[in-house]
Image 1 (cartoon, chains in turn brown, orange):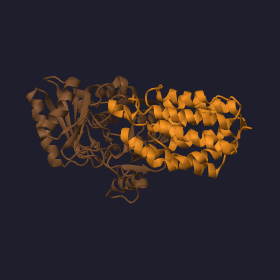
Image 2 (cartoon, chains in turn red, cyan):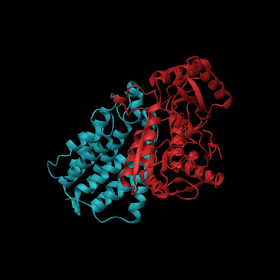
Image 3 (tube, chains in turn green, purple):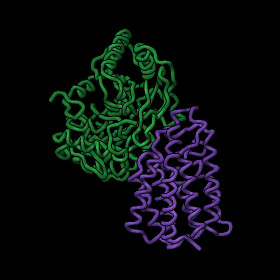
Image 4 (cartoon, chains in turn red, yellow):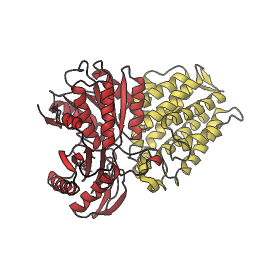
Length: 330
Length: 208
């Protein structure tokens, strides 16, 4: 294993120190428990929007803390959910009197720890669970669909609603509407190496790809021969379109995401193909996001996310945002 | 003869050692069907438990168990943190403020731990989780001759068998469930760690 780390045990706290050093104007990083909060203290009268999850998916979630997006992020160890005391601490530090909305990705550990935190917190708390990964087929006999790329869009849109002063019930209702309208799927060309493990999380031959991969290297639907970019984009887009389902005339946001190791030249290539496939079906791409925003360490691969837009979502997507990873309108 | 607070602390020291020794094995089991963090997370949790027990050893079994619970909840993360944390918290509540635990009290604590894990994680036997190890353990921990060591040893044996029974199962809870049929053929890491912890408790009780 070759990685730019000093000690596998302290990767996350060392990275958080660097993040604080890089963004002193945007973030205040607290240790023990680890919480990344927006600089400047709680916004009085505004709903605190809080998320969190295992580390290794940067810039998710800490990179989305700032004006117009998250109030706080709770980083767990690599690929491990944060603990409930981190979440309780984040709520206490950011609740400006209007309560807190917790955005939870649907993984057993995340759900359990955020659930305990919601029980322990002294503020008014609502939670939403995002489960946009269409690769998980049978939710009745599993832990359910995973929260993946849709999380980024959800955090942006709900963060903008909280920023304009929507109350907790309105933020929660909006979050549920976004969750109901967003679908994602990913693929991996290579595995990733978790620092404290030191070896690849799964095996993939040189000429193979895993379709339906999760963001922790959990296997997906199937391993197949890696084909052309067009075949890869179709393999992700078709199940997404069928699932909601998306139809001709729908207005969408298309999010083309790198798993961390795929360079932008390949990502833009894939994005162009996806835009063409959607245009062929009469689906109107009104907004886009392209880049590494929800990653899986150094994994090569990509995910596609489609969000069916309405006027309010477009307005909130366009609203000013100023975070380490997303910045416009400011 | 029952278990004093010092005996419970000794059992937890033994558990911490076993977790340390089996850290890599638990990581490997979790790598096969999960996200490769179970061994590391438990090691971090029990290391924290030891340092808190060393700093300020509580004076009743219930207080020891509660300290273990809060420490695991705040240090382990993942699903195992809340699940084991809830197990120790319920066990603590089940034994009240007794200074010594007799066999029925230990059995009560185990039952309460299982009830807590089921309430928190909503798994049932056959889902390929720690419930598959803990459920037979609770049944086996009958106090036939009133010996805590014998009851815990029977529980540990049953838990080991329960853990083995997870090998052919298809997971229905947790991250392994995403694998569907591909999760069969691997032991559930949570069931394995439950069996290891109970074996450590039983061995510590036998030496007490």
